[in-house]
Length: 193
Image 1 (tube, rainbow, N blue to C red):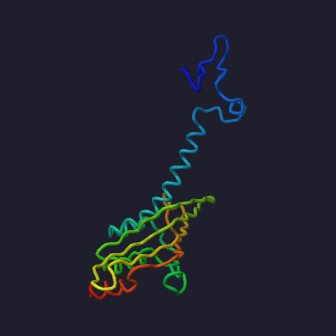
Image 2 (cartoon, rainbow, N blue to C red):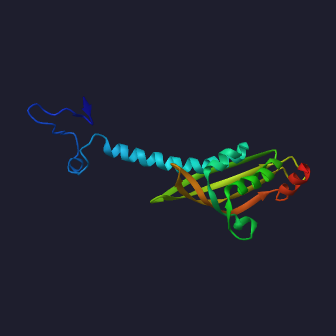
Image 3 (cartoon, rainbow, N blue to C red):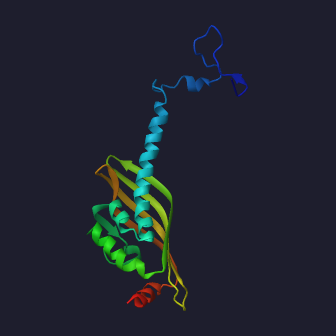
């Protein structure tokens, strides 16, 4: 077998000398177990993916009106901070109260679409902070003033380990801007009444 123009098998009479391997790689003190570095990186990737999926479950659940999915992704009590958009003060709320409020608000719209990305994750023991970008598009055929209200910002989410799963215990919106028909929530609410 050839690798980079060199044979990958040890020359006869030598014991596993790997002449094709760069000298810096031969001298590293990696564990001798097979694939241990690979499995450690894979385990870290999978854990990070589970954290991101907990965040995604909240927003996908909201768009699909799958309230149980939202609720499962939250810790029992959540520090919620949407003050950059709505004013007021951050609050520690039962997850069920947050989901109930969304149940009363989001179905007013014909459709909602939350697009998330640019995730960064930092872990400290049993806690993790997930930073991400978010764009929330709300659609309602209003007739005048436009049919779309868009909210753009970044989010900070704190996650904790609970019952063998990562759960969101803090969610903060850092509003960048709103665009479109800013009266759409009221128009959609009036039509729903």
